[in-house]
Every structure is written in structure tokens, then in C-alpha cells.
Image 1 (spheres, helix red, strand yellow):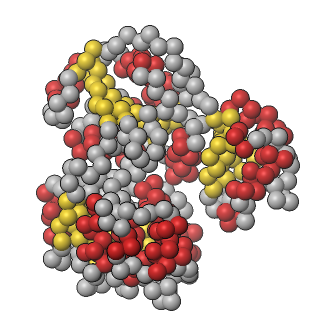
Image 2 (cartoon, helix red, strand yellow; image 1 turned 120 degrees about the vertical axis):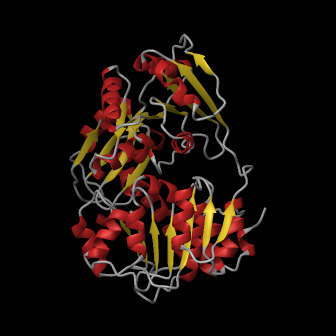
Image 3 (spheres, one colour; image 1 turned 90 degrees about the vertical axis):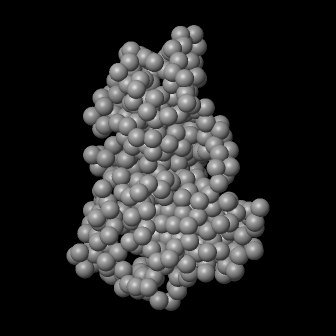
Length: 450
């Protein structure tokens, strides 16, 4: 396996890689990085979780000039969730360089703040096609100095109808420039797009042997899907899962049904406000809501290392979507389980996915497995830009709330909000203790999410 030290990366990037404990390259990194660093266009077929984000992050940062304050690189992603993950990786790698400004430009958030940020300039832009094109058309975003463009999860952007927006965005980009296109699948639509947007690209396809996730795929024939879902959770002792539905209406209804039955779930679909989507993902990641009922678009880009299973409440309509769904589990070296509930009229639709999975009868659930919620989230009305650090929050919870470090779960901080997971059995009493107590010398508004 190749080491990152074999690459001609600038010293600050090598230092950042060591600090982040990135030593050995994944197959996609080993194949693409030498080509990217030479300045060639790349069209790569690589799945989520293959390490492609780090590959193009290093390529971008190798070429960015911190002293030239203009947008020098553009990364387009299908969803805000994925854009934020990409931005996080790039920022981590840029930590040793200094003075690198990155902006995320995505829909679902007020445009006014984004337009204001753009007046101060940025080196790297990461965003979704719709919002990026909108800001370009309003002359708030200038890409004349952009020498590198990246399309991440290109097949998903095409599936979501962004192809016209992408082509319109590329009309604002200078020529020549380096273009990198990453896609989990390579259908004809991606072939056509890559031929339009790239110049003599190097085609890369990672081998199937590339850390294939250990995912057990199961299909059950069911009559009543809601009752079957409860049985499946108990039979397989599932403590957390993403439950996929084909439409936002079904997702919202199922989430309500599960909560009524005492199974704590949150929903995630494209019609939700971005703030609500963010809170749902935060609570799911920190264990405050063990089940997330999601549509394909909203579920894209969610990366949970220790996810027991994904459950297809609805049979996906395309093989690509099935593959993207099951790819949410079996990550970070963990085993995963993908379960599909198939009603009698969906048998042919499931067989059309050609997964060579025998549809089984639903097992009778004899398990006493308790589908419980272990954590609850406390929200604090202050974040990173208010100079509130995670250490300040931990200190307050220990000294004012009487907690031990073991009783404090994951802390997520945004610009002006902080979310803390607390053991559910004590969350209410802790909230009462700290809601009017100072943290770092200030009293902030504090409330419980549920």
C-alpha cells in the first residue's frame, strides 16, 4: 500500500496528514492523486467511503495560493449535508496552511449571509448547484480565477435534475482549468456530462476488491409493513437504523406512526427547512433519536460509522438507489445489515434489482430486545463564533450539572448553537440545574430537544 509521503505534497499538507493519522492511501487515492497533482482532468468511478474526498481536497489545497484572495476552486455536491462533510475534510487538511477561507453555499439557508460573506472573498467554494448558480447569476460570486472544479457524487446530481444547472455554472468558469468528476456509477448521462466538461481526462475505476463493506442483505415478504418493521427491529436487535422511504409523504407518516408506538424516530426529507434537517441529523448521530426515516435525497451524504442497519421500508425504484442506501451501513470496518420489506405486489420490482437475494418469510419475533433511546439533546444558544468551546460546556456540565465525563455524549457545535447529548434518564434534571447558570461567565438560553 502506498504512503502519502511518496507524493510531492507541500510540507503543511504532509504535516496535516500525519496529525490526522492518514498514513496509507486507499486505492482511489493511490490511483487518482498522482494524476490530480500533475494537473490532469480526472473522471473517477468511486463509491462513498472510498476516500475520494481526501484525494480532491489535497489536490485543491496543493494549488491554492493563500495570498491571492479570490475563488480558486469550486466543489459541487448534491446535498448540503454532503457539502458540509466535504468542507470539513478540506478545512482539516488546510489547518497547517493558515489563512485559507472556505465558504459553503447551499440552499435551505438565508442567502443574505452568504452574499455578505462573498463580499469578503474566499479561496474555496463548496456548494450545491442551485445556490451556486443563483449567486453567480446575481453577480455575487466571481469564478474568473477558479482554476479547479470538482463534481462530487455526479450521478446523484444528475438524478436530482441538476445537469442544466451544472452546465450553466461551467459557463462561468474560465478555460483552461482542471476538472475532477467523481461518480459512484457511470451511466450514459455521466459519460455525456464528462465529455462536455472535461478535457482529455484520465479515467479511473477502483477495483471491486477495494474494501468491500461486509453487508448482509435480507429481504422479507410482508403484508403489514408497519407491524413487520417492529418485528424486524426486535428480531435483529437493531438499536439504530436509517429507514428509507420512496416519498416524503410516506416518510412523514411512518415517522409519526413509529413515535406513536413508542419507537423514537425523526424524519428527514427535502421539504423540511434546513435548520430542522440539521437538528434531525445531529440527534440521530448522537443517539438522541435512534431511528431516522429518510427519503433518498435527504439520506444522501449521511455518514454514521456505527450504524446497525438500513431498512428499505419501500423497495427502491432503481438499482443505483438501492446501492446508495445500503452503502450507509457496513462502514469504517464494521459489519452492516440491509433489510428490505417487500409486499406481494412489489416482488417483481424487487427482483428487477437483480441482487440474487431470496425473499424470506418474516421471522416470528421472540426477542425481548428493548428499542430504547439512551440519550437526549440539550441545546445551548451559543456556538463557535460566540467563543464557546466544547471544553467550556463539559466543564459547566461537570461543575454546575454534577455530571461525570462518562455521562456526557457527543457535542456538536455550529456558529451560534451547541448541541450536547446527555443520558436521557438524567437530561431533564441536568437541564433544570444549568439553565440559569453561567457558562464561561455568561448565561445562555438552554433547552431540551425531543
